[in-house]
Length: 368
Image 1 (cartoon, rainbow, N blue to C red):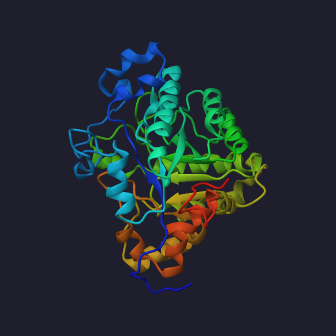
Image 2 (cartoon, helix red, strand yellow; image 1 turned 90 degrees about the vertical axis):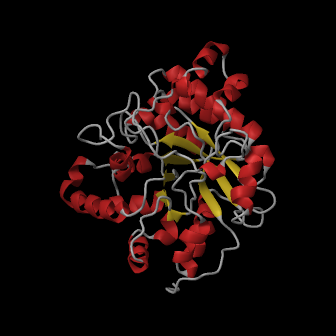
């Protein structure tokens, strides 16, 4: 592998975390049963938010103007992000990631379904580079599976999207209907930061609620760690051997540490998990992927060492997190990486994961 960082730009970039949002919750009315309409007028449409965030979630300069929220206009986003950075494909991950924290599972499922339809109608047709996620509410995995089957055959849909915050770890068997539906529809499962400590979910930290958003933001990765630990140890990948899971917006530096710790404990306690046929780290490298944003930023040689320890040439995908305040541009992140590793992270790992045909990615979209 070439160890010298390169300044050249990649000819192809796949952005695995691109947030589209609504102009207002009124946009969901055409897709939502009338019984839920009055809730759309309430603050945040009654989706829970429990901690004050003094820094706005999205960059003000990503707003299309006229008082519209950043990320709410596809044409503006195309010029502001896709064209500016020569992005070949952008996987849409939405803005309703507290939906799985709502106390009403029927309302949560209806909101997720309406948002999916809104995305397919208002974002996907505007540019062939956009790819869609199926947002599901995890409170009722049977309803979530039904939503996956409803939209899973759409040619622009590439993954199922779960918010990382949940009442129970995702490795437990009650979530199997979601994985069964994802495998049945040949879709990746993406677990994205959101819902931690909100609504019906447990506190943000293992010792209770923090005081500030700064404190919360520092430890968000513990939720991704917990979900990954559960999914591997409960044997999800033995039950669903073709399943692939992406962990989005959870950082990277914790991955080698967790793999080492799991492998060490597996040697001493494997009689508790007789269904595991391989070391935990082997399941992680084979089945799990991790996005760059928000990437930790040590000295560059330490960054390359960290990526090497987690087999980044196979496991890491590029993401901007557009249009959030701490989003990363390709010119900042990718230019830190050696040439071959840069190509793998910028494009090839995601193209292989989503089964994108290289000859079609610029013109015809998804090849499934």
